[in-house]
Amino acid sequence: MNNFLKNAVLGVQSIKPYEPGKPVEELERELGIVNAVKLASNENPLGPSPDAIKAAQAVIGDVNYYPDGAGHKLSCALAEKHGIDPSCITLGNGSNDILELIGRAFLAPGNSAVYSEYSFAVYPLVVQATGAEARVAKSFPATHSIMPYGHDLNAIYKLISNTTRVVFIANPNNPTGTWFERDELNSFLSRVSEDVLVVLDEAYFEYMPDQLKPDTSLLLKQYKNLVITRTFSKIYGLAGLRIGYSISHSDIADILNRVRQPFNTNMPAQAAALAAISDQGHLDHSASLNASGLQQYAKAFDGLGLTYIPSIANFIAVNVNRDAMPVYDALLREGVIVRPVTSYKMPQFLRITVGNQQQNDRVLTALKKVL
Ligand SMILES: *Cc1c(COP(=O)(O)O)cnc(C)c1O
Image 1 (tube, rainbow, N blue to C red):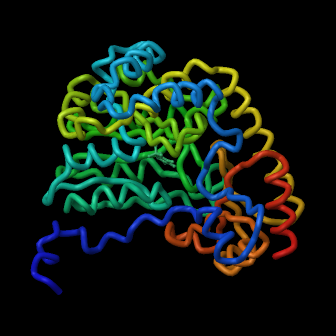
Image 2: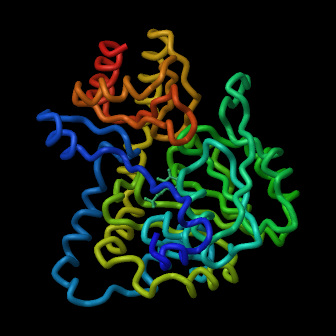
């Protein structure tokens, strides 16, 4: 090994790179398939709001100029939407960027971060890159009556030690689709020391039924150590533009804004996001299409005798009762791309993104055939 490779921060060598969903073009190229359907990366089947497309197109001729590094207009619009001050907002190149910023600003060798098993693959990546210790809590067991595979906040709480600087939790969680009851979340937050940053990843917030949505502005008022992350990649359908944000106490936002790249969010992304938040109709349509898609899957899995994890996100994890990899491969040959979750230590599950009805039908038909 070259000497300089050994100089990588302790932990970086052990990082397993993030495995994205297979792109449609790659499958079509490899297997000579046409009209492949990809339901592997939790993308919105409706695409972005037409207003967002127009807004991005309107600025594309100006990209010889640097974007507004502070994203002033978008930050102000988000602040208004959440009833908070713009100084509480941090914009990110996707919300993954925010997770990275948190790692860079708050984690170092000698301290630790806590998250649960079966949680978003980016948390271990962020933690390992800093050289901090990852403390991984057990999730609820598969046999749990209410929330199988869900985050167990008590188990997470117990792993917090005096070295812990950050806790990552997702609501709803990816790849399980599981969630927290409001009381459960509140009781956890009230117990965690103010010296520990709690990152509440709400990438799928907009898909949640209203009665399960935590009261964002109330939580932020109550807990100064809370960072809530949101994204435009999921329900807003802007994954390819890379834009997300966090809401937190302004002191935390100030730190995150110091460590971010000066131009971490680009001009078309800022414009598209700004337009997207005003298109409530597109949001509502996306959420209701998703809710009926989830029902479509649940019913079909019941019919096939397959168990699945109850989900309120835009995907569902189904247990295929055998090694899921050959099933995944056979589905590829049917022109259907879903997501194996072996790397999440769920070797018998496939995570399927909720598409439109025809796409869901196609996945279900292929799954029936393959099984
Ligand atoms: C998709 C996802 C994100 C968002 O990623 P972006 O960088 O905003 O595209 C964050 N957290 C979870 C749990 C996700 O599934």
